[in-house]
Length: 598
Image (cartoon, rainbow, N blue to C red; front, top):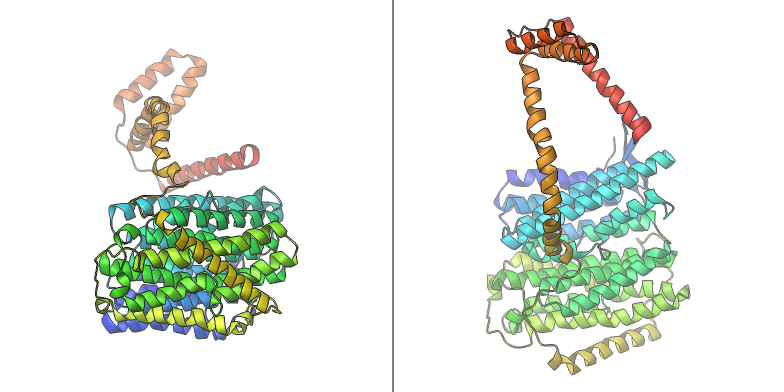
């Protein structure tokens, strides 16, 4: 018997226990589950475990352990620990259950050794994360949640169709490198691209995340996009298309984050920007680039969760998230400001923070491969990151024009500050001691981030961004705006589509609705009153079509007039015969469809 469990099982079973306990015992359970999962990770040997035969054809591999899966597993569990501390005061059970199901299913994706297992956890992840958006229970949140799940169901459908086509082509469900080789792999890539928030399939993120609860947004920022990064690194390393898709994400995220007014939407656009760096690294595909993508995902989860926590703390105390309604909070929320500044410094890649030791690995990989355009764009984008997430977010929320708000930081649950302090410590720790992170990366690391030219160049970029921001500050007026990008298609454009389709859909309903909604159900109900008599009437009617016999016609009339007669019970043998006849008809129809039509 194994001395370890699938990490997903610990979180999913633990989530089912959360509603059964209350108070301090619940808090101990929530914090204890990630601790148990972490020690469980330390005890897991490399290889495949918990492999089960399914239908005698498929093998479900719930635990494929290697260095790539482990680096994502470590940070997912660490994030769950920080999230559990942050949420320890929460009494809304559905949020807590959804958060732990979400974390557990994400770990299920990371350790899945076959596409079928991956798809199962992929869909659990989609539904659990939807609950975190619904849980805020506002009109905007409910609308965003419906749009969110619809987009992810579409992504899941693309993924499933691609998986089935891949199995039909190769006869294998193994989840390994497949590359962009045909229709099946393209559909799988599209399904993953939805979760990775690659434009134009990205608007769901900035639409839904800011509408979630204070706790929900913290968990959402960590898992969905990073599981997509993991699956891309596993199945599509070195796919050149991903380099350019990643660059689009990097630039797209910066532009819209600068335009945005809502603080949590700024940080949501920043997620797209940062995931873009990781996607570029996967597209480059070298060992240094893959290490960079994996390590940057690790660091990103820490500082992005920290930034979302600081924004959530502001929302918790003020009920506001728009920059136009905030400002001057440094006077009453000093600890939240301090932790937020650590997150802002890390995302901006200041030396001695995690972002400095990870993002530069991807940029260096582009330089070593002499991909000049990519290297130049990533370098310039590093300055843009500091502009929107490193300066704009903390400046307009905590400084800028004083809003007059004086929320008491003492009213903030202490566990929220503890969680922020824990993540702030880790952001600095991996910046000061990057070797500890480098040791768990997929490939041996020879990269040295703290070189003179790298430090000088990065500080020049940061100072240039700061100078540009404050020189242009008088032109960066805060306005009450809502930025819409490709989500216009389903937030506004869908109305026009419905208006256009209303007439043809109405015509189809009028013509076919009577048949499918009235006649067929009514016919089935009529048939059920006396199946044997109805069958005789149908048989006589078919015979009449070919013979035209007046005798048969009069018999049909008598049968219809007397219908349903006295329906008699079928004997056991007659019933079995009827069922087998219908079943044989179903099998024959299915065979004809699959063999000659599909």
